[in-house]
Length: 156
Image (cartoon, rainbow, N blue to C red):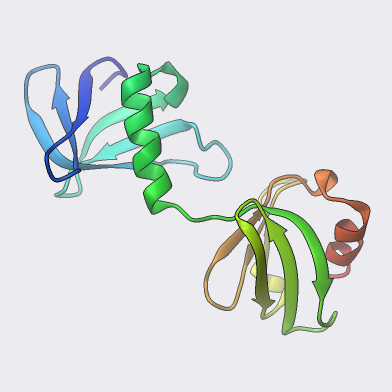
């Protein structure tokens, strides 16, 4: 289904409703990113309440502004991946270790159980899982300040 083959709106309960080009309506649609970290704005599946794909979006930017806004609102309400902007302190260079970080959502403490909880997604991108299962993203190691990179290097 191409980007223009459907319309999106919210019903009176706040759920997304997709109306296909043939007039078929799907209530309770959920957008799901195909590549949430590597390409968050490309490849979104629109999945019905029953778990069937009822729409596909190649690029979020190609959608009309109203549909794009609805999808972005829905994704924001379901996703929680704070992005680490700075590592201010670590309790120990041996695991488990408590890290004090500054994220795009404020300050946080995360407990790193082991170095295996730091997953390299690319040469510059990391995903760090804390002991509670929260995923923290380092979008670009090179963009971190010198102190943060020095602390991080001890674990890589």
